[in-house]
Amino acid sequence: MSVTIPRPEYPRPQFQRSEWQCLNGRWEFEIDAGDSGLERGMLGRPLASAINVPFCPESKLSGIEHVDFMAAVWYRRVVSIPESWMGRRILLHFQAVDYDATVWVDGREVARHRGGFTPFTADLGIVEKQEVTVVVRARDTHDQPQPRGKQSWKYENFACLYTRTTGIWQTVWMEPVSESRLERARITPDVARKRFVIEQPLRGVCPEGLTVEAVLSDIKGEVSRSAVVSDGSPSVLLEIEIPAERLALWSIEVPHLYDLRLRLIGPEGFIVDEVASYAGLRSIRIREKAVLLNDQTVFQRLVLDQGYYPDGLMTAPSDEDLVRDIRLAQEAGFNGARLHQKVFEERFLYHADRMGYIVWGEFADWGCGGFGPAGDHQKPGPSYVGEWIEAVERDYSHPSIVGWCPLNETFQRRSDRPTVLDDVTRALFSATKAIDRTRPVIDSSGYAHRVPETDIYDLHDYEQDPVKFAANYKGFNEGQPYFQPNGTQEQWSLPYRGQPFFVSEFGGIWWNPDARDGEDSWGYGDRPASLEAFHKRFEGLCNVLLENPLMFGYCYTQLTDVFQEQNGIYTFDRRPKFDLDRIRAVQVKTAAIERSEERVATRLVPAGA
Image 1 (tube, rainbow, N blue to C red):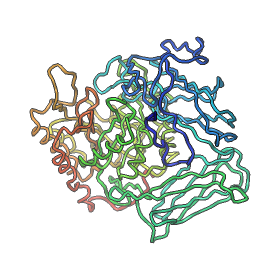
Image 2 (image 1 turned 60 degrees about the vertical axis):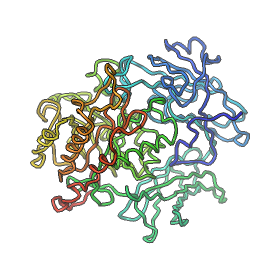
Image 3 (image 1 turned 135 degrees about the vertical axis):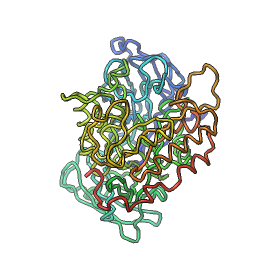
Image 4 (image 1 turned 90 degrees about the horizontal axis):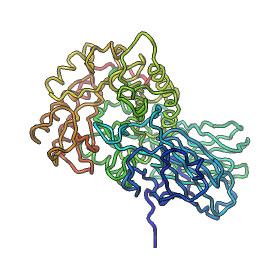
């Protein structure tokens, strides 16, 4: 009888080797309520139940559905090693484990990782055995600063916080590699010079004389290639030029992707390592208050996407569900998303790349103060910086990402004395700029801008009356953006300095067509009296921003309902709640910012310069 493996697709599409094995499916599992399992011998014995990886134990799809707090959970599986892999080095990959993971193979510790949203790898060395036993312990603290995103700090869901995720929640897999191998490349598009710049790290035994080759192709075949001989350094730099006749830009309308093959070649000409990748050629620039894509003004009609699913929680039930969410947003007239309070799995970005869907990469920074009062959630610690750097490094080469935002809604008034929040905000911003000089960075979205050189200035405004909403932005043309929460801008943020500006959260209109009396339901403002009232409110709010020539975009809250937060364009199970033709018609009007280019200076500078 065949066994269906959940989420069987390759989890890292932009750096893909031909040989690999998915380890999703049935694992032994046990909850360790007191985090005493190591002392009680759980490392060396079978576990009490079974779980369906990669779904977290809180989810229905895991087969466990335990939604109470879990201090630690354990996983165990006997893994078969293909005979053809014998004598080669084996890498065991975990795409995401929340939060503090330790991995043992045959009783030997092989990896530790702190961070619930980024991948890590256990190098098993050269394996000569047919089977190995893999054991994973995941700790999930409740009283320490830890990036959690929208995971509830109470037992129950409430307001905009939802069921927690503990343990493995993305794909587990392994692959064989050579002693000398390629690490993940950093691919930078350079439209002005018609080329890609590829920073290619090397790993293992990398003596002088190994050749690194990059071959770029399109549907017609090979476009260009470049090669460099290693001098023994840990990385090499390649520049791969594109002939004018084969030049094709990545855009929302035509998301052209080049195939890219990277090879590590030995002195005798044999291939030591080879990976398949892809790249999109596009530029992001700032022109005064406009953010340009390929030197064209594009009004960013973004939607807030929290990436939750009724049965899988933070894990999409299938790859098709990731595609569907992008398609649903596009059908409603959005051309991109804020990937909110979550580092999305990489296959979502792969689909965004190929479907022409622009996104802002964000971090799950909520949960800074542990599970305590809401005011403690905005005290991130230094550990946040390391995990955020891992996220930026993972996603750097995806053309769909048009900006970064490491923090969200840091409610803390300014003081004449520096705070930990000030220091961490600066560290996150500086680290992002050091890694990526090609995209704009928001220091902290929402209310409290602490870094004067932040590339983008934004606000969150959930005013529901379109007339009052419009009045909030009358002073914007004079350099005085509206400021929330109650109080003056100076109490929360450094002064606005003329950066590109957008309202990065608005709307959130509360509407549940299936609402029942007494049901827990939540949204912003008063519930509209009718479906027609919703449409008029939606149109009025969008028009305020679409018709402002100095606004480069907006982000509407939100794509789908999530549990009790019922303010989505779609229900939690992805059914449309409104007339999508009307929703789309409002948004696809030509934005005033695109009609009024003469009102914006023509000086071009690289994004974030």
